[in-house]
Image (cartoon, rainbow, N blue to C red; front, side, top):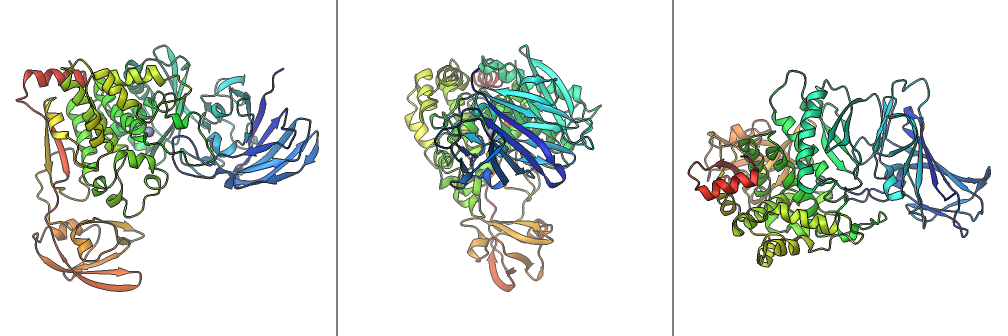
Amino acid sequence: MSAVHRYRISPKNPAAHLFEVSLTVEKPDSAGQIFAMPAWIPGSYMIRDYAKHVVAIRAESDGIAVDLKKLDKSSWQAAPCNKPLTIIADIYAYDPSVRGAHLDTTHAYFNGPCVFPSVAGQEEVPCELDIQAPDESIGQDWRVATSMRIKDAEHYGFGVYAADDYAELIDHPVEIGHLLIGEFEVSGIPHAIAIRGQARVDIARLCHDLQRVCAQQMMLLGAPADLDRYLFLLHAPGNGYGGLEHRWSSSLVCGRDNLPIRADSDIKDDYRTFLGLVSHEYFHLWNVKRMKPAVFSPYDLSEETHTGLLWVFEGITSYYDDLALVRSGLISPESYLELLGQTITRVLRGVGRHRQSVEESSFDAWTKFYKQDANATNAIVNYYAKGSLVALVTDLKIRAETDGRVSLDDVMRECWKRWGDSVEGMPEYGVEQVCAEVSGLDMQDFFDATVRGTGELPLQAMLASVGVEYHLRRASNRKDKGGKPSKKEPGPWLGTTLAEKAGKSVFTTVMNGGPAEAAGIAPGDIAVALDGLALSAANCDRRLRTYRHGDSLELVVFRGDELITTSVRLAEAPQNTCFLRLDGDADAMAIARQAAWLQSD
Ligand SMILES: [Zn+2]
């Protein structure tokens, strides 16, 4: 019989948030087996050092204790032994995010990297996981939802699951609890969604809409050969938003009120956002989970792994997430243009886009994008949002310059053909080369400007080529996300954001070159008064509207416990809020390109 690593996890003490995890290695390294916990989880590019949650760990062989020595922050070495070796750990789990592990008396959830050590030198050995039920006093109606292959368990039941190797073992998040489950098929492949949280959801409607989104994405790149099942794990608390992609599943969080309830028939803005999240994580099953950067093939989970390609794997994914909603007919072209206008607005509002390119933003994701401070708006660019706009202008440029013969869809299909199944992964300039090859265009200058440059993207010209008008205006108030026209005239501009924090109004960001910066205001300052009257996050827009740009006013703030009085000269708000409109006068060529782009006949 070939070797297999036997893992077991049990919700040992839910009230103390402790899982007990054990791992038996049949043939440990005779020099002393090393075990390691990952420092990060694929898809979330930050060092998290999951070993810090190991609160106790011991080893034994044949019923006798074996010495275990800690080697560094993440690894241990057992004393040499020549019989099967078992390590047993208590792991603290109280991180409710999609990157964490969470256990209490109401449910259990875990990602493999948080709870399963790897066996050094034996990462290729097949793994089995015995998922054990909690004590009878809780969890009577708990079910198990995971995309891991069943070895010996009922569907949605406790028991033994299997994975081909360690990398696969940790790529199946597991949700255990009182679950609402819906099932549907895409291209004959069984799909399911398992929802935790007290959500009143119209599950039939939800499955119907998810099916349309998934089918649309499936049409673009086709079903991967090994995709024989797919599962969405959804946690629906009062508030929250996020997702993490996996090869056969994804973990999602969204506010329960964003989901459709019975008798809803339209698509509200929050539900549209949720469908965009579903579409995004699902697209990742091709773009980053199978086709991935060369440096992620395989992942080194012990330290940061840098690539300039996150704009491809997150940006292009972000482009196709909302695009799939309009292409599937779930939302109208006008609704799609509203989303696109909001994305453009997000990018235009950060002056950091003139400092950092999307390639640099990708490379430094670990220390900058994932560790944003108050200066982020001035220093960095979001490789999701700007990356999706680079994808947009690339798509529209190729369509325009090849008379509609070639599009980014063709580029992605060719990339998928080359790297969907490759051991080496995509080289750093892979997408750019395929764009040039498939389109026959010389795109070097274009990518130097859009991917490695920090100038403005040619959005207006490219959108005009598909019959879409590009408009800029000033933000009408602090809640204005763009995407729509506004009749409301904004007041003058302070060049800062004010937010409510613990009952105080705090300046959270101070824009480079803005009036607040010139007045010496710093992030963290607490607003006290403007022109002799109380100033707060809630009344700031209203107060400013009573003045004109050019007015100089006294501004009073607390920095720590020191009162600071300064003078601020109000400026005109920048034109950084975008909305798009279908151009009623567009020519036939532009209309034809638009129809091909949005596939709206
Ligand atoms: Zn993503």
